[in-house]
Image (cartoon, rainbow, N blue to C red; front, top):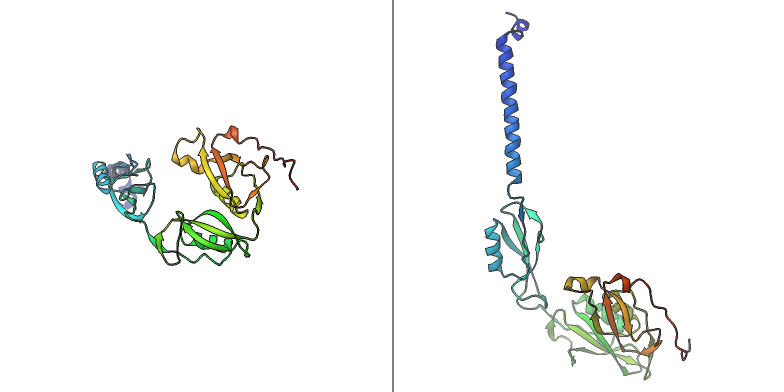
Length: 274
């Protein structure tokens, strides 16, 4: 029997059909098995672990077949020491079972650093050193001096801090600057539409301070404060054109777009020399 004649026999046809059928069955079976494997655990939604202790995190994740690993420890005034400050993947995301959740804890104690030298340099230099050291620039005061805007004193919580003293990282540092004349003034900037960070920069440029910060009724949660913008300030440049350097400017912030639609007009007071 030739090969051509064999291909025409019923035996070959039945065997060929059997091979195709078994192959198709195995492919379909493999697809179903793969789908079951890849879908397994996808429905696990990560809960919000912020503010939980590691013991609480372990208990919560064990119940839903997840595990965790401490990735970092960072100090924060706004979170209880030893509790979760943040985690990744974030709450609400869906993952497979046995996935590791990386958490960042709030450190038990705040990192300490030596107080840098800020005196006898310019205000701008002092601000750069404060920010690069992990400290926070606070208020500005003035004292009579023949060297205007030279840093005369460095303070924290009303106390003068000597160079080298160990202080908590993130401390607010107030500066006392020299002024060559009593009553030296600055123009009041318009802060309408700026966020708090932008307002701080604007006021720093003219040697003024941020005073009382008030959020209106539209700001309900802490997370919304970062998005809030200034809709009112006092003193207002429309009524007070100049103020003494070091004056605190009170701010009102909102996320209500209707309050931010129209910018208030600036009018120089009648007694202005400009």
